[in-house]
Amino acid sequence: MSEVDSIIKRVFAPAALVGQIYVREYGSAGAPMPIGNVLAAELSHKEDVKKQNNMTSLGGGTHAEIRKVTDVELSMTLADINPINLARATQGTVSGVESGQAVSEALKVTLGGLLRTKHLQPSNVVLTKGTAASEATVTDEEHLGVKKGDLIVLAHSKATNVTVRIGDSVATATALEMAGNYTLTEAGIQLEVAAPGVTDGKGIWVNYKYAIQGEIIPAAGNYEVRPAGIYVYLDATKLAEDDEVKISYSHVGYAVIEALTTKPKELEIILEGLNEADDGKLAIVEIWRASQGVASSIALLQESGFINLKVTGSVLMDTTKVGDGISKYYRVRKT
Image 1 (tube, rainbow, N blue to C red):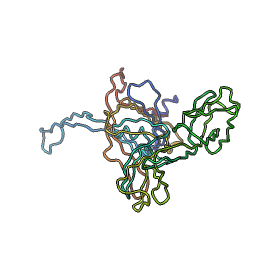
Image 2: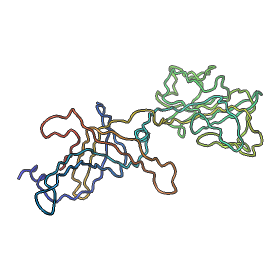
Image 3: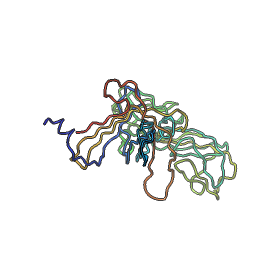
Image 4: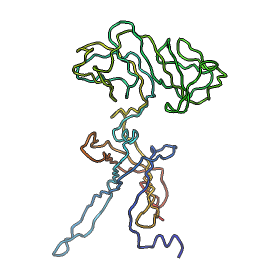
């Protein structure tokens, strides 16, 4: 008996699959990409059954029947709520915002409320009110992937008391001497073309002071910095209800998912299954074309345990698959 015959004819085949699921948009030439940990994946079939009664004898029964598959549905439980998975489940679009600095965002104070900054996870926060002249301090303003000869434009012009560190990370960066390496400009820092202390591709972190308009309001006794903005204390000592303030700060890079902004995606899906109950034998399931519907619910907060994302879709006919015995829907290959 050949190897293939033994695979096809063998009876012992208990199944307990684990493995990766890869996805790409239907019709795309790009590589299928893993979607993370999938806790459950299931195909289900629905039939339309038409029966003809047996009228030839007592007792009835079925004389004939016609069965047609009307739907093949796919359901998955996703453990990794990453931006791509979430966007597909919400018919959303994904974009990114690089880390950077925000300057003089105008906001109005509500005591006991959150000043919602435009960007996430603010740091190096300077909150001012009024028009009095002041001086603010910036610590470790980040500029990555610099090269000799670059002009490093700082978030605030006309910087003074400038110190620069260079390295692979903010934790390991070391001081960069000014002499021979850079000069100060009104916009920022001009790296010398032959700067001996600069290695192309490294990061630079800059400390400096700059002039601002307005009284700087200290955090102590007035506010605390939170991931989504600035929380103002109900009993703030230097802020009052409806004060007009301006906030300058650094922020992290982040992804933005705008929900319900696009049509459902059609996907090609590959399950790379490994059978834990049968010596790790393969079960590769390829779904040629599937539409993913919007998630019926998305957990935001829950008392305990992990949040999972349940998604469903329909397996659709792929007219590009042709030939006798070739499925236009999906196939399974097993070792």
